[in-house]
Amino acid sequence: MADLKVLFATSEVAPLIKTGGLADVSGALPVALRAIGVDVRILVPGYNQVIAKLAHYQVVATFDNLPGFPSARLLSSTMAHDVPLLVLDCPSLYQREGGPYQNALGHDWSDNAKRFGLLSKVAALLGCSDSPLDWRPDIVHCNDWQTGLTPAYLHFAPGGVPSIIAIHNIAFQGIFPPTMVQELNLPPASFSVEGVEYYGNMSFLKAGLFYADHITTVSPHYAKEIQQDDLGFGMQGLLASRRDSLTGILNGIDTDEWDPTSDKHLVQTYSSHNMSGKAANKEALQRRMGLTVASEVPVLGVVSRLTHQKGLDLLLEIAPILTEFPVQLAILGKGDPQIQKTARDLWRLYPGKIGAVIGFSEELSHLIEAGSDIFVMPSRFEPCGLNQMYSQRYGTPPIVHATGGLVDSVVDCTPETLTDGTASGFSFSGMSDENLYFAIRRAVNLYYDKKQWQTLRKNCMAKDFSWNNSAEAYRAVYRKVLRD
Ligand code: ADP
Ligand code: GLC
Image (cartoon, rainbow, N blue to C red; front, side, top):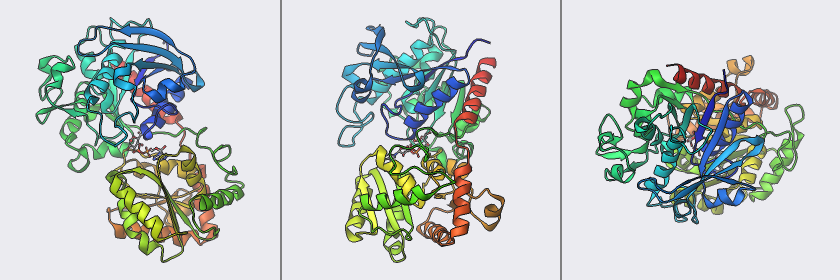
């Protein structure tokens, strides 16, 4: 069988542009798919940050007459590991100061429907018989709401290939007024419950979930949760009705980028056989975050978007109590102004015990994974989560709320799981400050039992979080879609 050809349409891809885990996945999954013989090409918008990093490119298509959209060009380039990259260059929509979704003040760009409508439209066009490219995918792999209209456009286009949509976070749904249906040049008939309509508005995500041939999401546990009222965010009915076309595939991690034996962001590399470098990173982290340098005091690390989803408000609430026993907090995050303010206030109130850096720093995020003793991730919901996997690989057992991908990737430490070698962190059920507090107490108590702590760390570091298995699972989904 000829190589399977896949267009991977995404709104962010590391290391070109990243706000969260979607970028990590978009950077790493195509590499793993290509390694097993799938011909994947990535399509991403030409934001400033992306264009600035292109060392070379060729213009391979121009779009001057897409109804409802400004003129655009398609640039062809490559990423690391020779992954082909297509950049959708449309300066009036993408080249501006700010993030991919929001301006510098943290407000959504007012023309996001147009911006991601164009991305969706072009992804679909490349999968149609009137594509301007010779290379035509067998399937288009969409990601989240920003490419949610692709399956709808493909459905109504001549010779449209099948599509899948991967849900990375169902809380973001791309909801816009019904007038956008016409402005985005979708057929009026698509504005229906059996289509893009969603409680009187239109939703990019709903469109994807309705029209895609298959739906994936980023962990098996989350695939079940989103079919239920609590975590379906309104899409549970549609997802339950499509459950035979819904597959949860746990994300992997980029094991080259996140490798304590070679990580260039660390002051000293280390491995499970020789952990001495971890202590050096701990000391560097303590200095960097203004914490008292003390090797015996456990450091709890956090790297996160500071949003309601991540549950860090609970950690900050109990932080004053935590400072009463010997622990330190090292927090890196950016997001909700109120959570940022609380973190900064705590940093001022508890010098030497709480360190907070408000911002986005790739380098510091690596140092926190390596230099902390325990990682904290009390997410209210978590489709997959990557940091808990990074932290295990760095011998930093995570404390997690038992939800979504955290259930699939962290095994709670009990006398039994410690003995059978599966324990890899601490998980608590029931989202409350009290439950988080007791999980932290459990972790800190074990930390002082040097022998058991070493066993736990070794278990963590022995786990295989590489993309290999997940890439096979995606290929199986592509094949199923093409067969059915
Ligand atoms: P989400 O995508 O919901 O934010 P994930 O755990 O899947 O959560 O992925 C988050 C990614 O973004 C990780 O690679 C993490 O290290 C990174 N990240 C989040 N916040 C920051 C930050 N303030 N600085 C650096 N990296 C961050
Ligand atoms: C989303 C989710 C996160 C997941 C990531 C990559 O941002 O919030 O849990 O790991 O996408 O799939």
